[in-house]
Each structure stands twice: as C-alpha cells, then as structure tokens.
Length: 130
Image (cartoon, rainbow, N blue to C red; front, top):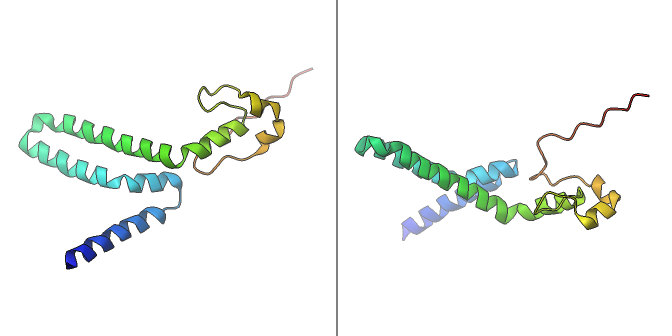
C-alpha cells in the first residue's frame, strides 16, 4: 500500500512543477517533458540494439512531443488566442479581417493574452514625405 502514496506524491510534485513555471510556454514544455524523457531513453536503447533504426525512433518521439505540445496549447490557450485575434480585426480561421471586430476600432486597443502575444509588434508606418 505504501507504493500508492509514494507514486501519488511523485505525481503531485510533477503537477506542482508544471504549474510553478513562469510562462505558459514553459508549462506546456514541462507538461510534455515525460514524452521527451521516455523518448531519450528509447532512442538510446534503440541505438544499442538496432543502430540503423535510431533516427526513425527519434523522429517518432519528436513528432509525439510536438503533438503533445500542440494538443495542450489547443486545449488550454487557443480560445484566448482566438479572442485576441478578434480584437485585432482578424478572423481566427483564415487570419483575414473579421466583420464584427473591424467595425469596432476600439477593440483593437486591447492587449493580447500573455500566452498568445506575437513575438514582435508591427513597426509603425513611416510618415509620408510631402
């Protein structure tokens, strides 16, 4: 019976480690870390047993890790990102101007959620020469 408590405490420590991350990107990375850990161990074992298959096994785990990060982002952060796109006058599906958001320019002043802020803001337009 003691093993249940031991593994339960390890799991709770893992969950706490995920939520103590400073940014959403880091939380996603930490949440999918076990896939990378198992992938590294499996890739190492495959290089010992069947060296010719090492790159294939590594590719499988790389794709699995990407899938984990993508699914986690879609489940947790995509709604906030879509709302932010709408405030910028863009449609979440096609990245084209949305009719309702484009009609209300006051919405464009809203800031993006921390999890979906673009890497760099657009540069202001250069003044016209007269």
